[in-house]
Image (cartoon, rainbow, N blue to C red; front, side, top):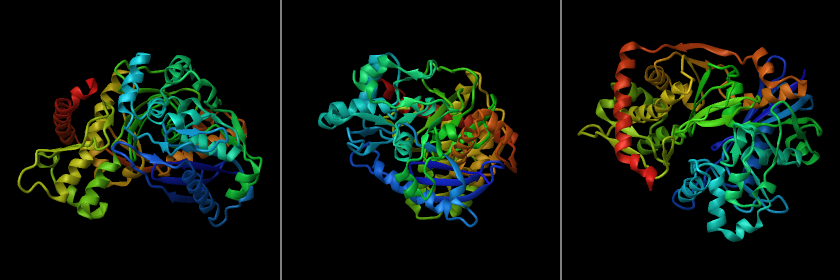
Length: 485
């Protein structure tokens, strides 16, 4: 039996799935946690070597599942957290810890870089991180000879070669997603030498490299098997959810919240709210990303010391709108809207409001309404939500499912496999190993969906429409002027 391996390097950990290439059935799974360092206000960093350790543990855990024959693994694919800046020296060793997608320390550099190239670039993208390093850590920057993204770094470990794909490269700030190539003018605005530091681009349907002997030994696999191009986690989640045709929208509830769907053309949003990303099939994936999603509910859990299950029960007993409590969830700043200086706000507190139920419900609603804000923009750009495919850790929360259906006003569906990014990586690897176009491969073997469907309730839809208006207006009053700082 031909089996493939899908790896997902996330912010909170690495996950791996061993998948039957013919049926898509998951045969084994492994995971290893990661932590985020915050050495300075706004900074969010991880060590690239820790990623390799986590990937190795996750893969070995997946291969240890009963009945899995590691020798039968015929291809590997990698999904990775987007935008992280992996700066390497001449020996391909990290110059410093990688600054992550949620790092807002380079907000000023993002504004200045955007002004130089004539378009807005979020602080979380890769380019401002390099500008920050060049300005704040010139000795480190002088040592940089290669700049990779997190999934590229894993591919370098696997193959010994540096390559990337158009999907993940779309989130660097120095890539032209319409032309599907690097933007030399934007690169020069970072540094004239940057064009020589970036990895080569590999097509979605191409083999990126082959598994080198040292990596094969570390993981317990055969050397020489193909490694696909891989992509960013959102691109791979689209594959893992079977979203390869126009009209399918996916919402992902992870550390960040994302809303995206495949498109046959590049979708450029003049407001900058929707990112014009490429996908992992050779097409495009217009995408909204909010920086604060499950991190918001986790803060409430930490505050009260109660498990999410108990908090959900308490929040379910509260009315829509949490009794007037509004949670603006911008704990780490925000990129959609582009408010990197924003911070979380709990508004509307009255005597008796400071209870777990109202605050947890307000957190769920705030994280959801931040995504709803972007859905209207996607609709205006030709990608209306008629139903949503929901993935990510938050998708398992029954109350959150109800809030999503009512706030978006559309039915919700759920992939049977919760680790959609790792599954997408495995499917891409299987397609490449078989010589089949990725989109055709996934279309012919759509991942199974759960029988669960959550339909919106009309009265609740109307209530959330009013709540969304209030939510948007409050954020605009408090943080709308931040963009001009």
